[in-house]
Amino acid sequence: MRADVKKTTGCIVDVVTHERLEFQYNPDEISDEKSTDFAAIKVPGMSHPRYQYVAGEARRITFKVSFFKGPVKEKVVWLQSLQYPEHAKTMLKNAPHKVLFFLGDLYPGTMCVVRQVRSRYFHMFDRDSLLPQHAEVELTLEEIVQKSVSYSEVRR
Image (cartoon, rainbow, N blue to C red; front, side, top):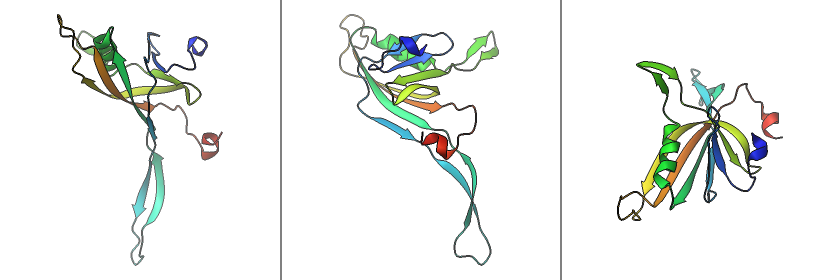
């Protein structure tokens, strides 16, 4: 799948359906954060707690993409749909689809789930249908990692 992705254009690929959404414009800014959970152990008589590593939190990648003209609503709805499960009648069939996030060498196919989609539609609406002609979408992705990662692996 990586061979058919342009390195200079960011995109998100649904790993189940292989549908992809190329960004009209790459994000101007990306927030990439990860936190770690420590248990504070209070020792009687000590001035400060001792800390014990518990686990790492998910790595969150947040950025905004803009859509101008064309099927703006369809692009926003496609991103939103990545947060919904599939049902068979009243039973859960599948969890929301995982995605690959591509943005050059910075994110060369990072496996994620879509945690949040925040959409803003701007003053440009089609005169007849009132469909939006401009949208800004803030995406929050969380990286999926199958096995524990050590500090030396992150530095590579």
